[in-house]
Image (cartoon, rainbow, N blue to C red; front, side, top):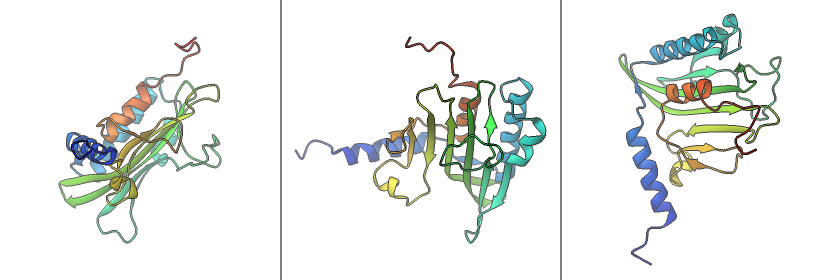
Amino acid sequence: MKDKLTWEQIAETIQERTLKTTNLNVKNTKVLRAEILKCLTQAHDEGILVTKLHEIHPLLKLKKSENKGQVWEILGGDKNFKRIKDQEKFGYFERNDQAWFDFAITIYQKSKDLAEIIGFDFEIRFPNDHSPKFIRFDLNLPSHNNEIKGLRFHLHPGNDDIMLHSPPMSPLEILHLFLYGFKTSRKPRSS
């Protein structure tokens, strides 16, 4: 079977193609944060995001990573691995259909005018009667175990143990998808 590709080789090819076609360069971390804030504010003004305007700014944090040189993080809410919808314990953004999400973006600031997004996770969770319960997009940091598997850029469709190659999407594109796509419906198409 020498002429047949293994799944690992195919996954690596998909990973390379995805990373090549995804724009992960930004001017700098502060500009990206400002673009995200503008997007969230616009969604609030349009009635898509029900998170109060005065809550958006404090939920969108910019912090320098400890001991990692010019590495910064943009945090949109709090990581919530247990998926508990409780604003007292976890900060998150909520849509008008009760879906809610948070995200984290890791950026390497190469120079004053050039930064590279080196990792992120975006997770949206849906109301209890919805299936799937969540969808998460991950771009693991370089040298993560998933990079070896050809799955550095992947998504989880409602199960932490299932990983699919992600379509090539930047963090702003995923944010737009979370705000304007993945709409929950009172009458599912499957019924």
